[in-house]
Amino acid sequence: MTSCEYQQIDPQALPTPTPAPPPHHGNDRDKREEPKRPRRKWQVFPGKNRFYCDGRIMVARQSGVLPLTLGLIVITSGLFFIFDCPFLVKHLTSCIPVIGGGLFVFVVITLLQTSLTDPGILPRATPDEAADIEKQIDNTGNASYRPPPRTKEVLINQQVVKLKYCFSCKMFRPPRTSHCSLCDNCVERFDHHCPWVGNCVGKRNYRFFYTFIVSLSFLTAFIFGCVTTHLALRAQGGKGLVFALQESPGSAVELVICFFSVWSILGLSGFHTYLVASNLTTNEDIKGSWSGKSGEGVTNPYSHKNIFINCCSVLCGPMPPSLIDRRGFLPTDESVQTAGAGIELPALAAKSEINVVGGSSQPASGLPESPSPVPAPPHSHQNSSSV
Amino acid sequence: MAETHSLQDMRQQPAVAAKVFIQRDYTKGTVCQFQTKFPSELETRIDKQQFEETVQTLNNLYAEAEKLGSQSYIEGCLACLTAYTIFLCMETHYEKVLKNIAKYIQEQNDKIYAPRGLLLTDPIERGLRVIEVTIFEDRS
Image (tube, rainbow over all chains, first blue to last red; front, side):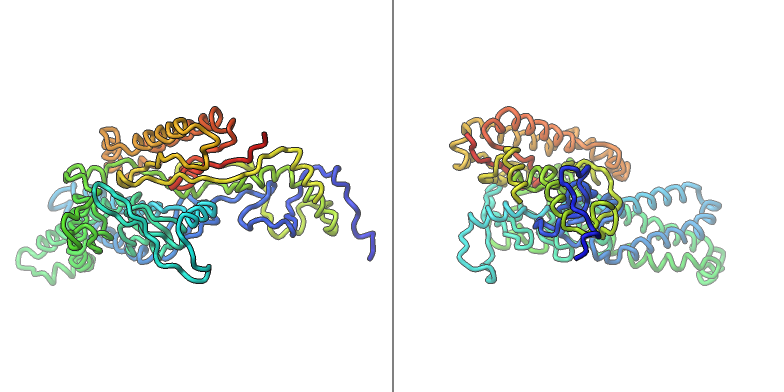
């Protein structure tokens, strides 16, 4: 063994801790030690979501047909502005593109907000919490056998509500919370997973979703009406519909799209208006949880018994914050036992330095895991306001 | 490894003896409320009334955050009219109350819980599911 290839390092002489994590330091893979750039929580998020803009924007992993939805709206509105507006401005009023433009902007904004907002995801239970819950439940089976579903009953407004245990998130789900299998997350006040917007619809984005479908129905109806008027005006004087369609081919496309979508969207808006007025979710309505089928006296315990108050509380209630704190930094120490990793580190790093060949003389060389070091404070829990 | 042990002793960091979780109380619906039942593990450490007062104050603060009042309606309607874009620039009422809650918990920890070897974790860091009370080993 040639001793000239490396030299013994004096641990006391080390100026700063080097970024190489000691291989025998058996920490959780998620945690990084001080000098490395601290990772944000979205990078270790367990659900099936994708994050953009450093955690500011999130979507479900399966974007569904969101590009199709957006494409249809943009194309239809674009055709409307190109083919119908000039004619209608000349023959009717210039308010038409203004109203159309306003509705279009409203629709796109609310669609993007529905898709890109955290729907109300509940973060999974920490290992300590899960262990505590397990202790409270009588668990006689071994790890490989899944025990029968665990439920807890709670009385809400004189109604018995069953809380189910979520095996993925390791906690009892709060009332009205459901686990979405597509996103692999528990979502509060779970309504449904909408493939058209590519996201779950839950507590935090239900108002965006409702505003989106209502404004979309207005937009579709408006475009439909305008296109019909346009074609009718063009076909006047005995020229015929075919002639009108030939002159304005875009209108034909719009007519077809709007005709088929206006009924379904109007129907959906009507259905969700009913849900909002009775403070129900699609999930509860489909399952018939409060319809009284299962017995006498079963009413919705969450309803305020007043349509106006129900609407206000669902649509204009306080906006709850995102619970998953995706832009917060991962703590470098999860529990107090590993606190002071900063003090431990130089000693351990020093120890590893002695074993590593030529490692300490070039601290930034050949380390596959370290990105460009950013001097961020190690114990920061930054709760930046998130959409 | 001998080096790290001596460093650890020098730091005199108390070890965690146990963790108690105060679960949510759902009897009033989905509003954020915590159970005020006093856990038996804390009997030796803190006064029951003191603890219940802390939890009750937290409950009141959360109730205020989720209150359906004129302020929340105005905020909601204004948000709807602006296509909810004001949420990007404005801090909501809920977030303001959460800041108050964080301050309150910090203050309670400093004044009451830390001297008794306890630590309250802000429920927002646990997704508003539990209030985590960490019990440290009694070094005395």
